[in-house]
Each structure stands twice: as C-alpha cells, then as structure tokens.
Length: 288
Image (cartoon, rainbow, N blue to C red; front, side, top):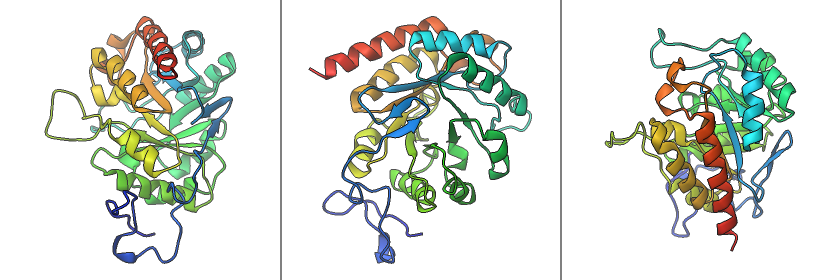
C-alpha cells in the first residue's frame, strides 16, 4: 500500500516518493468525479440532506428502543450506540457487549431505521451481522488488519480520523478498506489533539471542505467528541453543516448526568430536538 504525500501543486494528494506502483487511489476524487452516496438502510449519506445519527455514547440504560423512537420523531435518520467501548483505562465502563448490541437491534426493530455501532476487532464480525453500519473508532483508525477485513464485507463503514492522524493518513486508511472491494466508506472528522485544551479535541472544520475536494467519499463530523462539553456540541454541529458535512454523529442520552461514559458531552432529548430544527433551517437557508 502506497503512502500518500501532503499535496501536489494542483492541491491533490499524491503518492509519496513515486511508490504508488501504478495503482489508482480509489478514495481520490481523480478516480471518481461524482460524489459517492453510501446507502445505510434507508438513509442515503452523501445525498442532498444531512443525515444525522443520534443516540448514547454507550448503551448503559434500559429502554433504548423507546428512546430511539423519540430520537426518530425528533429527526434522527440513524440510531447510534456503543456496545463495545474502547476506553483509555481498562477500569472504566467498557460497554455491555453483546447485550448492548441486542438492545440496539431492538431499537432498530422499533424504529425501522438503521443502526451504527463501533466494532473493535474482526473477530466480532459475526456479532455485527445485523448492524447496518460499522464504526471504526479513532483508536483503530490505523488498525490495518481490521480495515483490510472490513474491505472484504458488504457493509458500510464509518471511518473515524485518528486523534493524531493527518487527512492524508485518514485517506490512506480508507484505501485499505476500498482496496478489498468495499467502497461504502464514510470519512469522519472527530477532532484532533492539539495544544489547545479549552475543548476535548480541536475540531478541524477545514477537514470537511478539504476531504470533499480531494475525495468523492461522504464526510461525517462528530462534534460531541470534539467538544467534550454539552453546550459546545450544537454550535460545532451547525458549523459542520455550514462547511458541507454530509452526516453528523451526535451523542444523546435520556439522562446525561447518569451516563457511564462521556456524560459531559451528551445532549438531552430536548437539546437534540432544538439542534435538529436548527439544522433543517440552516440547510434551507444554504439552498438559497
């Protein structure tokens, strides 16, 4: 697999040191002029309207199906929820595992809309057979064994940018998936580590137009992880829509204060309803 350099004089990312070996970079705009639409259940990502995946960071409460119905009423297109959670400390809450996936599948049945959840390892693939979209978290952004395995399946992948990765490296990770034959990849900006500590991570808003210029793949933004603070999620989400994001990943919990992971960045249902109204108004204004 060739490494990609920063950019050429034309602005396009190019193979470094002429090591492409004659291979065409599948994620590049030069390989496909038209934007790719990734179909996740009944949700077309990359189409006219911004698709919003909403739900808890981790599934840590009873009644997810009922909560998912409310999220759908509020305008969510996809239900998100972590069953397996990679955490910095092994003593933190790591998710309910298979029980969490079962709850998520019940939410899918109750709402009729697709679901997305994070996969940690290729050995878990059988457990995710009925999950509509597989999320690769920032910690696995360069787990090339996992990425290559996901290239062999016929299922959309939400690929998050590593917290210390360049856009160049993100496209290289997408290439591992696409090289295997799976072209249903959505690139996700979730904030990167910088010297700034006012937010949990620094949301690279410039990543959205750059990725849309360089690649035909849809672009998602996760403002929840970037913000780390509830009151910053909505303005960052709106900024992402204004920058051209095709999808948003929003953490919403019925009682954020009781959440077992990332409680400070999860919206309440009422806050999510407000966000969805503002997103649709902003989209309408941008069309004129």
